[in-house]
Image 1 (cartoon, rainbow, N blue to C red):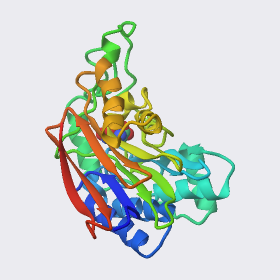
Image 2 (tube, rainbow, N blue to C red):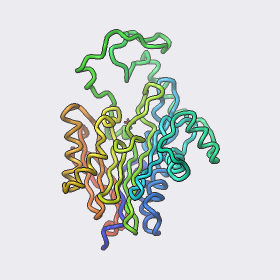
Image 3 (cartoon, rainbow, N blue to C red):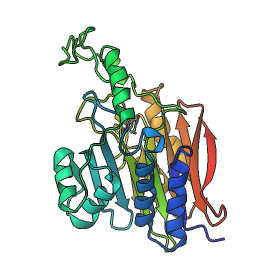
Image 4 (cartoon, rainbow, N blue to C red):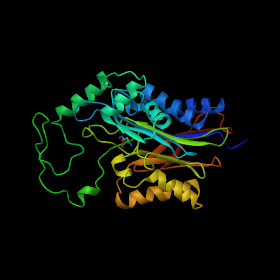
Length: 323
Ligand code: SD4
């Protein structure tokens, strides 16, 4: 069987496998890789995959859910991304509009919302009873400051501004604070090759729980959350984005494949680069080479499930890699 079309995406349960199935359906009907990535990730946003993609998850310190997404065309190297997108549930589709209809790469925050509304997206609250409940629970625990360093131990009786106590120490700065596990997955990251051999990659996420408002993760950052290059292949990442975005792991994996490493070796090289500095790092990556060969790596989890489909599997199929 021909090695492509093919599609790979992070995670498998709670909607992630359905997202892979949707992308595979698009590819099977001779849709483009870009459409497969957009429609696969869109399904995850609608299904609220694991509560970590789309609306109604990962409330920030103010209780608001905000979205990060990107989509990249490996042929033109054109990218569309949105970060800190507010009140619009369709993050990757807005990113696709940035790709298709602007000369920009990324739009952020309320202005990204305004852009989306101009193009006909409907504004709505991204909060749900569930996300507000998560937020309320967190607030009850005295607004335990997940993402702050060296701030006042009794930060804020009513979640007011934190008080900085000391300069961040070097060691402190290499602590990873974002927990993911089999219950708390995160980003959908996807790489697709269509029937014509064209490659695209993308991501969509609601980021990190209890993040400081305005925080943007790795997912919309080119080369961090995902990367695709028609000459080589693509990669997409999931996990502690605050750490990952310091290493551009998706870019590095693609570059290592360009240098002749196998998908597995390339992914391992990128992961090792992170783990050398952050031994407690939790995250994973999926890689798809232009010849249809794929690999996945992970660190800090027991096992990482991911979804893959090509002509041989015939449908979206769940794989596991041990970390
Ligand atoms: C991010 N990689 O924003 C994503 C999702 C995440 O816990 O880490 N969620 O960092």
